[in-house]
Length: 246
Image (cartoon, rainbow, N blue to C red; front, top):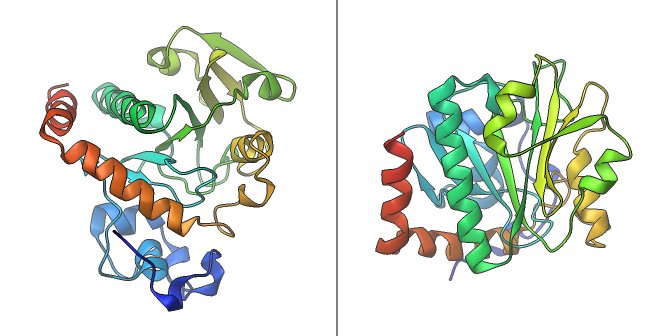
């Protein structure tokens, strides 16, 4: 069982030495270059990796800011601002990875919400904190599209596969939950807008900002459970084979 060192119990990233790592892309440092220190090693130590499973094009990792245990990210190994900024092959590889991680979380926890804050650039972020393509998969028994619709203009699509065809070069938010799959205009939206909604609907109001609530114990349990799931021969083989075959 993975455990926390006594000197690494704080839930805020600002209680650790992150003065240098926050000046760069934290995801590139961690999953592409392997540069240390990176944000994860600064908070958890250098003897641990949070990679659950990966292919040549993507990595699946538990997210900082565990609003609920099981919160995962699928992250592109290419530094682009959003999912739709990838070429067609890259987009479908991420889609397949998202579907397989969602299946894992459905088996281990419950059916997840899938969402992305799709940034256009470092300036036009669409509520995104880290401008590097990553998709959130959050197991939770709530729907948030009705609340998002009250704030943002959007359209319903049949499947995430249609996302590139409705995004018009502006920041966007895409959300898939029990109510369906919707794409919203995110030209003017608060940072971590979707995380705020999920935390509120789950009555975990102090967990919406990943920088102040890492959720370290939940992250480690997510890492252990999901890694075991994908390391199982019957589950891991389809992941690597399916995604790499696209």
